[in-house]
Image 1 (cartoon, rainbow, N blue to C red):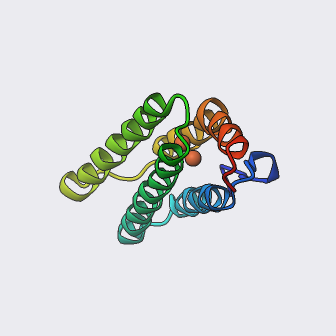
Image 2 (cartoon, protein in one colour):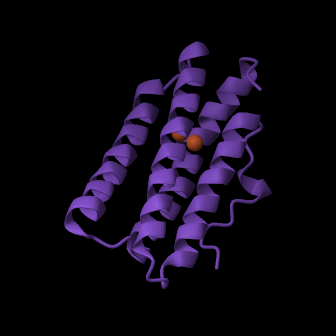
Length: 134
Ligand SMILES: [Fe+2]
Ligand SMILES: [Fe+2]
């Protein structure tokens, strides 16, 4: 069951960013579907995929913000960096200490996505579009 329905209402109007958000939400939902499955290797693979997609996505937004001199770049980037630290710490814990990817992590990701969208990405996209980004 999907825990994050990333539907039309989250569309920002910047094609690459919208596509990446949908992809990340898709990975979160896939991981959620796998929670009850014993295959830890598959979960680890998806966690790595999630981290890669998230990193690429943040780079996309940060490049756009730098190119268009978006206001609040640094506080926005600080949020990205904070999540990446959390993700990398979890990956270390899973790989080195055998920690399981659990539901609480997926809820954290879901809430982060929704709140970050609401408080950072919407403003960013509005300014980017005003400045001519697509
Ligand atoms: Fe984003
Ligand atoms: Fe962002």
